Length: 367
Image (cartoon, rainbow, N blue to C red):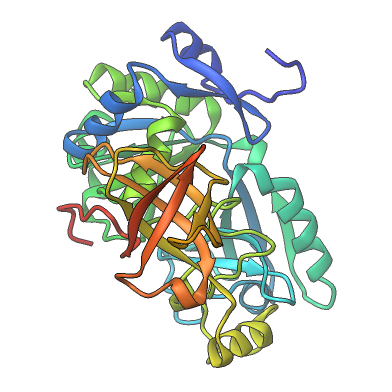
């Protein structure tokens, strides 16, 4: 293992389980255990557990906490009740995406938890600090102090409320959280998910997370790696920072404008988004379904029938749940309408496809 790679609090347990390990976001992370297809199907039909301890946790507190978070966040936290969660983005002034993240309004007044992507923790925290001038806030990056597991799938509630004993978590609605105390330490249990299925996230001290991981495995929940985490989120139409959102891809381009509240007070990137919504964007993220089993991959060209390149694949797979070859692609807006025929070049050959809705797979979970 590269000595420069970080490890999560569960690393040795992954190795003991025989997980295939690989670098991701600066960490040595499990990509798969029993296999991506097996793990993917477990989450779709039963339950799986993921190590997401590499994610970042930044706490914002102080008299100006709400106004500061609203200044750097595209969604509007003002009506957010304690115990509720919002999804949105942090933007550069030109509308490019710093990161997409979750904002938790804490039960304690003037306090928020911002959960950011693992690869962006240091960049995000530095960026937040740069924006904090003039605000009476304290920014506390506690990313190294928390472990986190995500239990996902139709049987996730049974595992979290039963095996782990967080019975009150059954009362959680989508995008809310509760606090618990275990061994004298705070535990946060939220109900969000990144798979399209029902799911819970458990944040706790590393030693508690190790215990919870072993308990859910003993209860029959399948350990899952980052491989199927990607196939699951992709089928459900969920973006990944670095692919469907980047410094060059705005939320409007990604079709995520509903998470950007232009009717709230000024926030970083607001003017750029307003201009994009009013006048349109040159490129958009779309879904494409291929008529062939050829597998599109990140970076493959998207073309017209005559070979003119009009875009590029951002994520592509042969869908496990649908048995179809599908992809997200950033294409010229003139070719972004549903039903538009497009071709994806896979190595030397171009394969026909059609623009479809980005939510390829509709789960049974009612949010």
